[in-house]
Length: 420
Image 1 (cartoon, rainbow, N blue to C red):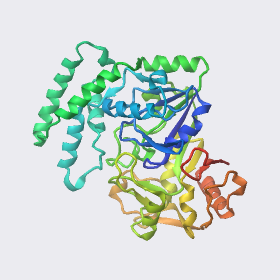
Image 2: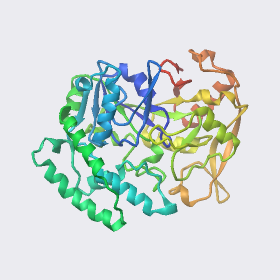
Image 3: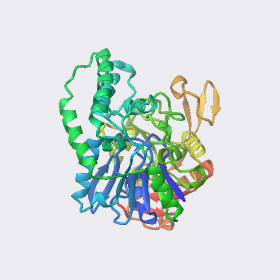
Image 4: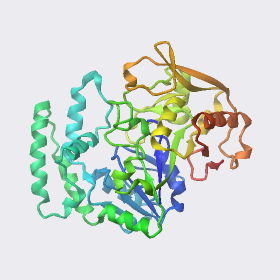
């Protein structure tokens, strides 16, 4: 069977640590969508490492890690990441597999991303400029190059043909930056990738499932960035919800069992786009400072606000979430009063559903207030020892969503995770 672990907000929920925690219970960890715009932060032996492409189970010796066909892969980022992981004594060639149907991010995709974003002026999407959007556009436009093409003797010819097409688009943007250094790095990384285990991903994973192996599908970004169901157009370019597992790995819907949703105890967002509970005051700044809310991939300061149960309920619905992991709960230790958004005020009406296009309506969030616990919870190991005020806060969230919070993260380290 396949369990799914994904983000329920706008990404940055702390999924990397949670995948790393659950990994020993699974035989395979498989990334099913997204690209190097995802940054999954882990702490290994007290050291911080951020994974952008490699699944977060890589540090477990007996766990197979698969990059699925739904991912768009940057060969340069992968090589750098592989070297970082190797510095921890991990042999990636032993347990890292890449689906041959996985699309490649080319240097010209990065250039197109930058040119497109620059052309938008004040209407920028907030792209990470990693080339993800243009790579997915080539995929849907049936132009892209895939990992399996690396094994074709005509790969360079295919690359040049696509590069020429991209150049015409770049010319139309007036983009004339020299990307020869990017291309040099790219072809060096391509040679490295040919030494890795490239497999027919859908047969590979289904044969493992048929033999009784347990799979954890690892999502990137968050549900509110889903290209269909997120805050369009301020979204990513892939399906970040659980349905993306089927197309991103080649597994049938009936193979999916549990959907584990990860949510912060509050809410953050990086880049542009609507954010109903965003705080532009001292409280928002305190959340950012205490939570160290800066992007793992970009370093950009994250926008911060109170937890939004309207959006969270929507994410639970479209994903079929069966359990929730709440992260960064310790960040709230220092707040005397907490707020939870329970509905949206839109044109004088109270709404508990997410509108078609959030950025085209004025939302006045309705909040329910809670007492803070004003206690350092970072060293607590058992649910019974949590402050009473914190239990009240979490119980309310359980009841509102109709989905249980089964784990509470109270710090960045592996062992700072409380089972409820």
